[in-house]
Structures are given as C-alpha cells and as structure tokens.
Length: 332
Image (cartoon, rainbow, N blue to C red):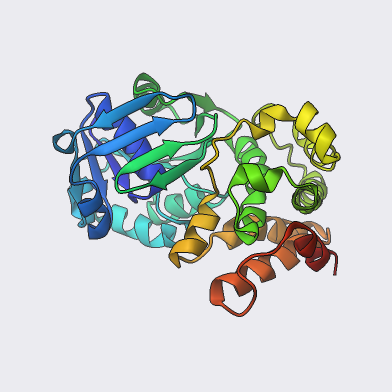
C-alpha cells in the first residue's frame, strides 16, 4: 500500500518513519521547515533502546496535499483544529477507494472527516504512545502503547502498521477505546501547566491530584451518558483516580508501571506551548465539558483547567505552575 501522512508532526513522522524504515512507500505532507529537518532522513528511537533509520531516499516529502492523490491509505495526523480543513482538501484530491484513518487526539475527528468526506471510507484511530521530537530529525517513542483502529472492513492498514513494527489492534468498540485514551490525555493540560517532563510531573502528588480530579469528573459524565471507557494500559478507568491520589512513596511503589516513561517524554500540549502553537484543549478537556453539558453533570475542574491553559497559551496568565500552586488554582 502506498501510504500518505497528512500532518508531519511528532506522531506523523514517527508512524510514517517506521513505515518507510520497513520498506513501504510513504508520502509525507507537512511544512517546509520539517522537510528541511528530514533532509538527512528520520532517526527513530524507542524507550526500550531500539533504533531504526528511514533514509532520506526512502520516502517522499511534499508541502502540497496533491501529493497524496494516488495513496491507498492516508493517515490524518494534523492537529484537531485543522481536521475540517484537511477533510475538505482530501475530498478534492484523494482517490475514491482510499482509506482515511484519523490518528488524532480526542473523540470527534473521525466524525468530522466522515462529514466532509461524504461516502468515503473513514476509520477512527488512537495512538497509545507518546512521541517527542529530539534534535534535528530524531523522533523518540517514550512510552509503551499501541495503535488502535476501528473495525471497518479495512484491516490492511492495521496489518501494514503491525508489520512495520507498530503494534496495532482493530477494535469494534473503538469509541470506548478513544474515551479510555482521552481519560489519560486529560493529563496533557496538567503536564503543559507544570512545564516538566511527564515523569517528573507524575512523581508529584499535587499534580496527580489535579489529574485525578479531572478523571473523576470525566467518569461521572461518561456514566451519565452510558459510555464505558475501555482500559488503556495497566490500570482500569475506575482505579486511575484512587491510584493517582496515593502518597508519593506508595504511588512510586504500587504504580511503578505508570512511571515506566522515558526521562525526555512530555505531552504534545507542552510541546505546543513551548513552540507557540495553539493547544488542543477543546478536543480533550473540552470534550468532557461538552459531555457534562449534555448530561447535566458539573465539570468545574475541567473548566478551570481549560481556562488556565488558554491563559497560558495566550500570555494572559502564568505559563507554568508548581504542583501545590496548580492544585490551589483548581480548587479555587
């Protein structure tokens, strides 16, 4: 399969790089600045010490989406705010039989793509691992996790990813899987506001207590909506908050697996804050607020976090908070 990567950011470059390193035909579409960074190839590393290299001549890079016109599968990796625009572009240039897969944060991106690509095959997806850009052309997978793709009669994409070293599973209940991942992604905002690598942030109880409060609100809203989020990782949704709230000494002992994270790992939202890009907060914590509004469940902690993040990104509020400082700000 000729595979297109629409959105050459951290996830797009890692996934596409792994495909190219395995000998597959890959076309990236992204900004010219990324093209220049990848002029010498893509270095792919992982927290377990494994390394791969996608040579510069093993893939094609373009800034014109028209380069995706003859791709059999197109993996959409743009930021959530650009999804509708991406869908409209693909509606004009993608061949009718191409499979479109959303590998984006949040819940609603696949639905937006389906609406703009009326009649096309669009599959929701979820990336369960963290990728950080390090140096000029290195993309580092800092955590364990797999790619999940919704069942839709197109298992070729999942097979392609799996054979390229990207553990991938097809799910009939992909929406529950996405909600399970979104629960974990509620920490993206906490991590961004901490200004710290993930491992350092999660090692401090007050930050974890804020994360736990966000999860509890989300679970109340999900229950009211009749949604059962899937277990993602080592801990089920119902146990996440109680474990996060444990004292540091006990958390470090019981939940050591949660901290099996590379020292360099940080969330995409913290990267966005550092690089002056808009946050995806409305597609993460904002989804919980919207669900709470539909089900009548109050979501004051998520609402406060969204306000703090937007203030940090706009420069109208602090860019970072200490652990106790953030806990106090959320508690009001």
